[in-house]
Length: 418
Picture 1 (tube, helix red, strand yellow):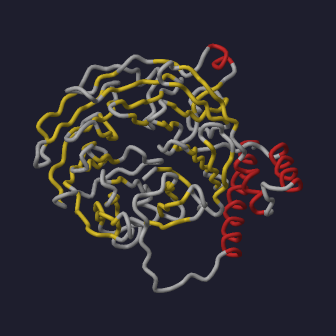
Picture 2: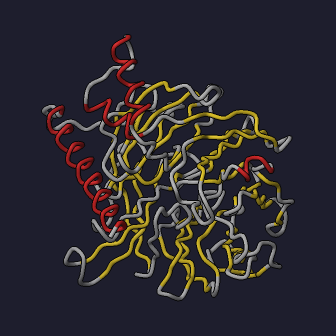
């Protein structure tokens, strides 16, 4: 009975947050100009970021400095084609999104395509048909991958047979389907190469020729324990090295510079004291990296085993050279931020700061789900929460809040940099 009451309370909180967000958006919305065609500036500003929304069924571009929404892309059938995972061409002139459509909304004949969007106008420029097999999962950050040269797109399929659909985005055509029994998701590993995580703790490597046909499909030796301490798929990349993290907080590097992906030496995010205190990775997108400084940002929470998806309350920063923590940022509670925005409590002024402090001290910390760091010399850390939906922009060197993004969406799911 207690579980039912808790579920009912949580459901009421979700419904109240959604209703309040919609009402606030309606109250503050203004009449838009009709008939204007906007073009994004080139190159992208250093603090632009993309944010996907599974409720509004879109991915939106925001300016982290001004808080302004610059544009949106909507793709696929709402409710079934919800994983909006943008991939950006190396020259940043095109965006690729695999999409699913049903003839009658949520049923009927299914059509899967890779849609090519113009990166300046966000208008669709082309559609490339693919087999109606693409997988959808939440949060979807490894459902598709673009080769390092920007030529081939790999789309992960699950029917429940696993495979990859290969698309030549330059020639605008589907080229091949690559079988991948026992292996899932996909990561770029070179101009003509991808790798996948496998159920036995190994990786499967796929190498393509100039025509997009597989020339090599090889499986390496197991290097992690998928039962005792699995790797999460929420990896980040710095140059030729991918960094994965396990459920128990061990970082697993994978080097893709050589002829085949090579697992590196594992290291732990947590010392004995942190483990005793119950600290673990958490959230839907719990890693971010600043390549130039070699700083790894990790979203953390206190919880028991198998709570790796529980939203985080702190961000810990590690020096990749020493593999040691160098900073800890306590993140503001999304619930306190959300209520402060609805109550129009400014972060400036004594009264506003006092009100916000009181809300932060009395309301529960509902946790952050996603983090991302920009790659400029004055980087910002973007933090998003799904419930209630809030986005805050922080100084990545101090953790201080620089801006709150108001009305960012309803079902925030993934963050990406252009």
